[in-house]
Length: 415
Image 1: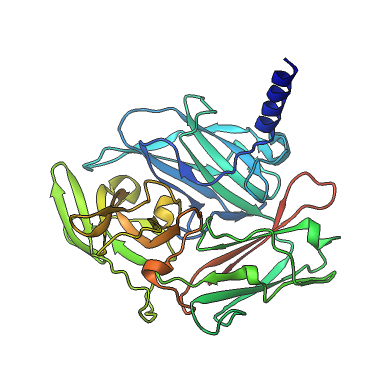
Image 2 (image 1 turned 90 degrees about the vertical axis):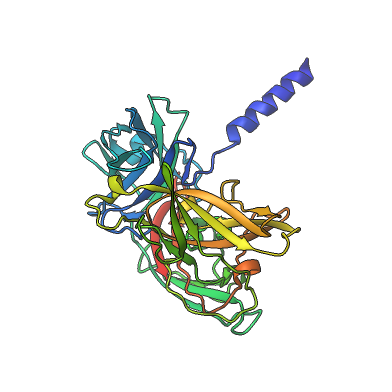
């Protein structure tokens, strides 16, 4: 009996200590095109300034014209996107939940959908402190059964960040890697012990799988933190993203081989891609994995843009036996899940995948994940080059001694 009680106590303890790590994702199959970003900055990151004029917009489509009662709640998170220990009244003013009342049905589309959107902050909800946040969306007040969630950050700028990207690293000279260097000028901002109080997160093209955390400065003083020649900040350069445009149903645009109407819906057949890891770098303009919703000659892209089944194809004489291939990009929130995994078709000798996407312009890459690993690499298919133009984002968090949450005191985007 005593053993059973001890096991029960251990189970309860583990359950209490286990914490959710939040990331932007969709949980319900009828929810599509979840987007979060600043109003007026369609290709920007979901980061806004505390007590400023920035407004964050969250939107998504539900694939029907049926009425749904959706609501949302906002949760404050630590630097690692686990829930902070704060009570909602400590980080929110006004209400702690809200109803989504702004919705419009699609117009003249082959796929019926209803477009929902809401703004943060709003008349009912404001933010008191900086840090990471997640907005959890649910239906019929079932808060514990989310249909989707979207992550964003609020920065209260206290430090200045200077950063550069170079091809010369400790391991090679102008090859396949990139070295990110940066310095943080405290500018009078009080930090007692940088090694314990400061947390740094660095992302390449907003990816989670290869993000860098737990960084220690190579040098620090009372006025400056230096992260120069840090081996943890060496990234694969990768290659520029592929892009395609499905803004028109009448003609195949960039990256598209053909648009087919297969009653009652549209299919977009993309150009075949190539496995080319050994070719020389060739510059190509991209937006580092992002996408934008757009329909040619539409008055309202949100409700007039249709959905298409997009067909990806990567010819290869045989599959990779030492890992899996995935589609990488913001359109699937950079997730390495089954929906993003390419399947090898032995009959056509190609990796294939289909994705239902709303009309617009998209970026994507092919990522290889070796067996037993969780970090993706574009090099196996795309190659990797130091010249590639990537977007690095540096997040500086500060938790002074005795505080209960991570303040976001600096954000820097480097391209």
